[in-house]
Image (cartoon, rainbow over all chains, first blue to last red):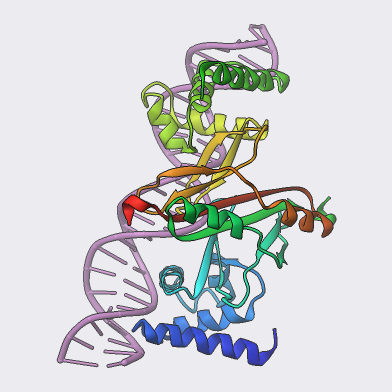
Length: 143
Length: 143
DNA sequence: ATGTCTGCAAATCCTTTGCATTTTA
DNA sequence: TAAAATGCAAAGGATTTGCAGACAT
């Protein structure tokens, strides 16, 4: 992730906020800055910590992640453990993750083979079809 | 789902319990009976309700679903809403669901195209690879 | 100026844990 | 009868809500 690409992703996100008439506040800027620079999905709590914890309230993080999700800026994904992870919605490229059950190491898998299933679903009459797909396993170092 | 197939699935599940030295109790029999006869994944709470609610404690449902998951009798899947759904593990046939965001109607999609991704993950050195995949959309009647 | 966003506190929802009692094998 | 499972009560963790004050437009 080089600087100009992060900058671009940040600007794009800010534009989305403006288009939705959402205000450009300090917490929102900081959260977006963080999200564009990060390479794996993080929980609300991890994002809160990464921002300094005392800086902004956890509730604000939740509310903004929610707002970001609604405007399509971030993707939320529920995990095996029941807690959700968030990542910037990389429109350009759709991928999934493999997550180690023990150390929670996370790596990208840069293919998405679910297109056929989505087609099946829309053939059944469903619209706005999206999916949540995560792979779980035990990584080499944890085995 | 005809009677003999339910019966068979029930017996198979009971056998798994015996093999794991888990005891065959009233709540477990009732829960399995329910699970084999049901066609879509249900939450712990829904299962509890379906069993009569006063019959057994919700905690018992949770503990048994957990035990069943560990012995491979049921699959647990986290959902967009943060709550988990459970279904009998149909070893014979792997499939996923499409869930309506509004009415929560659930239908099976009888293909799984994720095999390639799992292979990718094991090539990365991960073992015991499994996945969670759910599709979300808005069904015809809700649109 | 006004409607939106924030922080704080408290509530809610789902799930888990502790412990005394009952039940299964 | 010993180990495991249950029920009840209470704790826990993640997320949401209410409301008064602060801030962006």
